[in-house]
Image 1 (cartoon, rainbow, N blue to C red):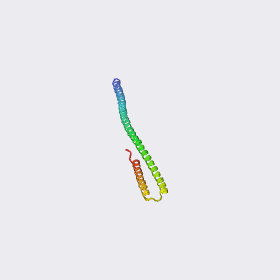
Image 2: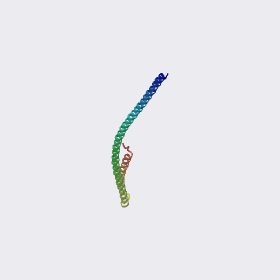
Image 3: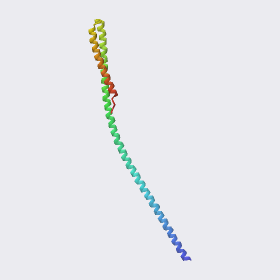
Image 4: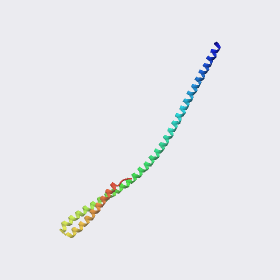
Length: 146
C-alpha cells in the first residue's frame, strides 16, 4: 500500500499544482483583459471628449461672429436713432421758433387771417414732419434684431 498510495498522493499533488497554475493563469489573463478593456474605454472617451471640445470651440467661434455682427448692427441703429433724435430736436426748435414768430406777428399785425393761415399751414407741415420722424424712430426702436 505504500507505493500505490504515494503514487496517488503524487498524482493528487500534481493535479492540485496544475489546478493552481491554471487558476493563476486564468486570474492573470482576466486581469490583463480587464486592463486592456479599461484602457480602450478610456481612450475612446478621451477621443470623444476631444471631438466634442472641438465642436464646442467651433460653435463658440460661430456664436462670437454672430454676436459681433449684431453689435455692429446695434451700433448702426444707435447712430440712426441719434440722428433721428437730433432731427426731431431741430424740428421742435423750428416749431418753437415759428410759434414765437407767430406770436410776434400777431402782436404787431393784429388779427390778419391770411398771415395766420399761412403760418398755420407751415406749422402743420412741420408738425407732420415731426410726427413722421417720431414714427420712424418708433419703428427703428421696435425693429427686431437678427
